[in-house]
Image (cartoon, rainbow, N blue to C red; front, side):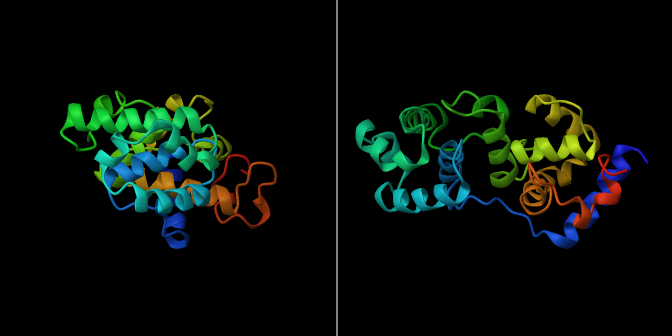
Length: 207
């Protein structure tokens, strides 16, 4: 069985288990961008709490762009690495307003020009906000892809390229989220629960 066929079967199982979605709460595209930047080395649950408080204080993109740096650092302190995150979020907000008319870009090249935005964040925006084919490779997706046998690479970009070859464009964004959910529920970093894993028979680690 080649990887395309395996992914098809894995996707069928995932579809029956996970109504997968992004675990970061947001209402506006720029809020997802900010939440994703905050999520580096921070749990999604913590980010959602922070964003809930931020949305009450900063009600528009312009409010983020004009935020006082020191005050904003205090607002996001619990996210960790708050100094760099604060600078990047304020700078990205300003750039979206000045360079993109206040709209979060809908293509990879423009998204990558925003301070603090890498491919993971850009792909999340493209897939979840704009419904475009996009594969988000976080620690869960990378780990599972290697264990299952869909890639041999550690570099997230190489993993992304390998997955794009075998996952149909229409399924890429959802499959990324399903990998995250599966990683949290079964395929954990230190103690994967292979004995009860619903895709064990399709996993290279178990075949």
